[in-house]
Image 1 (spheres, rainbow, N blue to C red):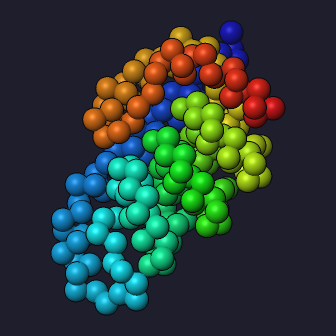
Image 2 (image 1 turned 180 degrees about the horizontal axis):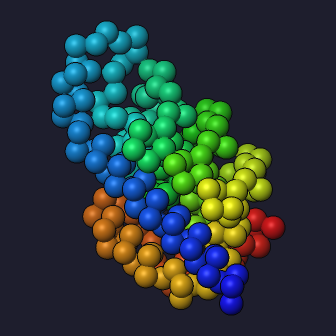
Image 3 (image 1 turned 120 degrees about the vertical axis):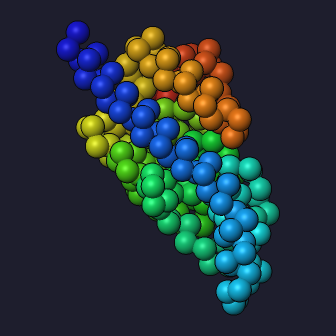
Length: 198
């Protein structure tokens, strides 16, 4: 009984931080016009990407992500509000091809966002099986604890009924920005993710 309360608190906090992460990524997409105006006066060595990296990731724009890499954009740069890196955002929104691109470009797999979650924590929480496997294959550390002491595996260990309302809230608030998942699939896949992360 006590264990469930601890896991639920950890999960609750992780979910609330996830909302901050996703909201900040979505806010960045609204700031593109001002950013473009400011960037148009700056000299560039390579083609200046038309949109910021986080927006390119959320909109699944592989061409713009590639352009950012060619222009030398820091692929490990943390969002000031949430601490999310491009890899964390790609894992959150289920952008498998972009996760692969970032891993191949040597993105740091151990960078934590503001709640201490790595890309593996996020991919596990959203049951992104392919992304979890890509991160495992790239030797992502499965033992890193977030700020609440949970490893990626522990983030999917609690009862689904305890976290279902948070998934529903995230889906309702962030679905319009491209966060898509099926609750039945999440419920079925949580034990699979836990086994993958043993």
